[in-house]
Image 1 (cartoon, rainbow, N blue to C red):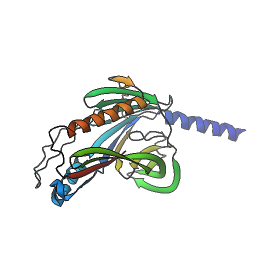
Image 2: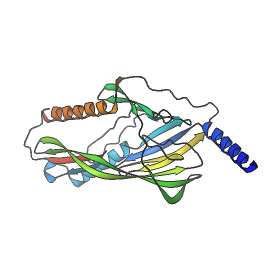
Image 3: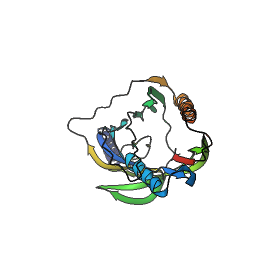
Amino acid sequence: MKNIILFILVFAFAKANSQSIQGVATYQTQRHVDIKMDSTSGMNDEMQKSIQEQLRKQFQKEYTLSFNEAEAIWKEEASLDKPQAPSSSGISIIVSGSSDVLYQNIKKQSYTQQSDLMGKQFLVEDTLKKPEWKLEKETKNIGQYTCFKATLTEETEERSFQSVNGEEGEEVEKITKVTTAWYTLDIPIQHGPDEFWGLPGLILEVNDGKVSMMCTQVVINPKDGVSLEIPTKGKKVNQEEYDKISEEKAKEMMERYNGGGRKKGDGSTFSIKIGG
C-alpha cells in the first residue's frame, strides 16, 4: 500500500512539474529549392548555380517557439534585409520575411494561424490532428539534450511551376514524404517547430528532405515569463477554405505572369519545384 501511495505521489509531483514548464526555443530553418532550365532559357550553368545559392541563403530563417504545457506560438524573427552583393551572373534574388503566426492549443485540440496571402490577411481557425508518429530506437545528442528519433510518413503533393515556350503551368505530383524528428524527454511537452507536435518531448530537429529545422537554443522558465497571445487579425476561414483561396490566387498569379508582356513561343523552358 505504501508503494502505491509513493508511486501516486511521485507521478503527481512529476505531472505538476511538467505543467509548470514554459519557455522559448530558437530554430534555424533551411529549404531546398530545385530549379531546372534548358539551354534555350538563356540561363547557363553558372547563372543557375548562382540562383540556387541565393535562394538557399534567402531561405535560411530564424524562428522562435514560445510555449507552456498546453499552448505554443511559432513565428519568424524579424531581421533587417542585408544588402545583396552583386553576383557574377548579374541576378539578385530577395525573399521577403513572413509575418505569419501559428498558435496551437493541444489541450483544446485547436489552432489559429494568422497568414498573409498576397497582401491580404487571413485568420485560419481549425482542429488539430495529431500526427501518427512512429517511435524509433535511435538516439543522438543535440546540444546538452539526449534526443530520440521518430518518423512520420504522409501522402502529400509536390507542385512544379513550369514555363515551356512561353506557356506557364503547374503540375501536381503525389509523393510519399517521410519526416524525421528528434525529441527530448528532458523537456516533457508535446510541442515542436511549425505544425509538428505530438511527441512525448520537445522536438528539437525536423527534416523532411526539403525543409530542415534545427533548434539552436532553449530557455526554460525565463524569469520574465512567456507571453502567448492568440493572433486576431485577418478574415476568419477554416483550413479547407484557405487552401482553396490559396490555390485560386496561385492560378491568378500564373495567368497574370503569362499575360504580362512576355512573348509567347520564345522557346524558353524552366521549372521550379517546391516540396509541400
